[in-house]
Amino acid sequence: MTTGLDVQDGGVLYGILADLGGDIVIKSDRFGFIEQASHGLSEAGFDLSQQLIAPHLADLTDALHAGLVRETYELAMQTGEAPQAIEIPLCAEGLEPQWYALTLRPLPAHAEKEGGPVGAIAVMRCVEQERALQSRLFASAKTDPLTGIANRHAFFANVNRLMLMGQSGAVALFEIDRFRAIGLRFGQQASDSVIEAFAGFLANMLDETHILARIEDNRFAVMLPGVDQREAIDCASEIVSTFAEISRDAELEEMRLTASASVCQLGECLDETLMRGEVALTLARSAGGFRVECGDAIRDSWRSRKTA
Image (tube, rainbow, N blue to C red):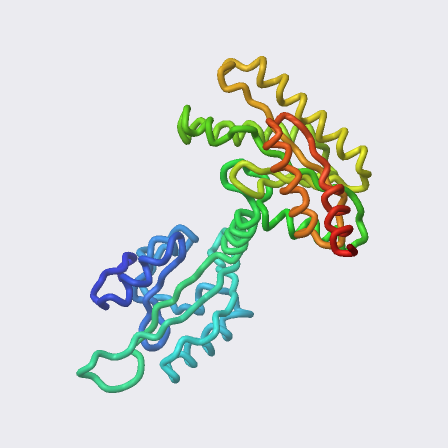
């Protein structure tokens, strides 16, 4: 019996292996006895080279699940189709059981031969590793890859959840002044370093109740729960002034980094609140930067125009 998979079964095995990482891949005969296996099986505690008689797939699990494995395998051989994956504990002697999702892919007979499948490819994926991967993917889908803080999608999800709970507050937007000039003068790597540093600075200036996210290239949003307009302006102003002081003392004096900000009371619609904030932020930057503008006056102006 061999423990390494060959390519005698054509592109079927190669295609499967190309898509797999640390999964266990097993080739079994028509009756479910193991013919070949990837090295992952021996790493899981089953050394086939030490066994005189080839084990059955059902021998890899406990007595409670062995019957399920046999029934699922017989179904695959009868129909020639891949049955639904099942979860079984892999029970190697002397080791703690580990749960795996078992998927069977029947191998059809060669064209010159008649009959049903001649065996199957069994793919076993560790359930704990799969769930850990899903958790990492879920986290990455809501995390900005450059700064490690929340992204726009996560910001909307978190703030909308708070709004549904009746949470009031304000939204502040921050942007580094003349950021494009930094990239043109010092290059993309320097721009990325500035973004990372600014994200870290904002995180240090805020507390755990605030929701910080990078929503665009050079734009950061902060949800300030439970604060009024005056408190939001004070918070944003302190951040803008502190950032300028730190930048003034930095080694790269020629960069002269400053930031602008806008604040808006959280309205009934987050999109509308951000729109007001973005307009106010544009006004702050157009006025030379290093300032804080309030977007609530813009909302009042829009409302007066509608009623006029």
